[in-house]
Image 1: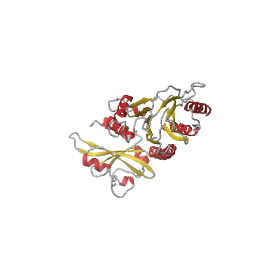
Image 2: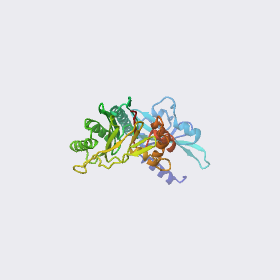
Image 3: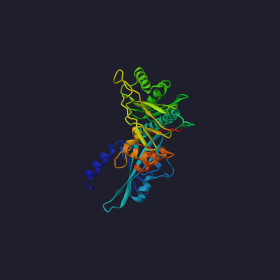
Image 4: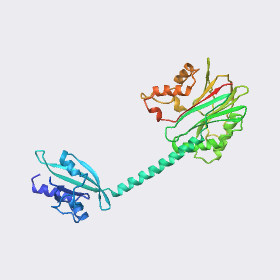
Length: 366
């Protein structure tokens, strides 16, 4: 703009800015300083070298203005001026021919913002340390895999976050029975994981009726003072190792365990009410099924059959049943299922599933 009035308007606009603004020629000389910079750096004068105006004796090692002179582009860096952190943006000034004739630098004090970012970063590190500890505690509550002459227990657990709301436990109430429950807590993350601690400590491991054990759990849940919006589902089964009869009951678990073996596939469907405060006294009834030597039972949560692929299709119960029928004699059925899941989803998605992914196998050996 050649009009003096326009030039005067530009000066007024730049002087009205809170940011510090200065203009350099191509020899690093300061040829303009706005009022904000004059007040903020009273030793900064027109005619100084750009680095002298910042109290330095030589050019900055990471000089953005020289980068702009070199390539004609915008460049940004952070600079310490005294005790303040300043963001510096260097931009090219070109004439009507597109030739570079100078550099305009805008300095913005970002000290307070940087302090906030640093504080948030430290809080995030603390949170991650807490999550790592919660992850270790949660995993310590999970049961060990085991195998003896009568039964083999193994499982796979992949939370979608560091800690999840899926949970399972397998134990022997006495020398003649093996019990297993699998649960899915509403929600994810820390609140869901904390509810699994309640589950672990509140389950009656001496009760040999799954229905009665779930009724007891329901009462304890309602006496605990937990958030009324929280709830969990659970499927509980007990196998009598003398008769190979399995007794089971369901507390709203949406997916049913599958019994599979040679020429056999049974789904342990059973109605039931979630562990919640929705009704006063729900009934949980026991059901029974005769098992045979060599039978295996797959327990899982909905994260398995609802796992989506890139086309938003779910893995589904039918696909799972087909895998079990084709691999009824497969030694590591959990690995076989996992391999099929990997083939179904996009590569790497199984490492961080969209929902907690839990499955367990009980194998009857004798």
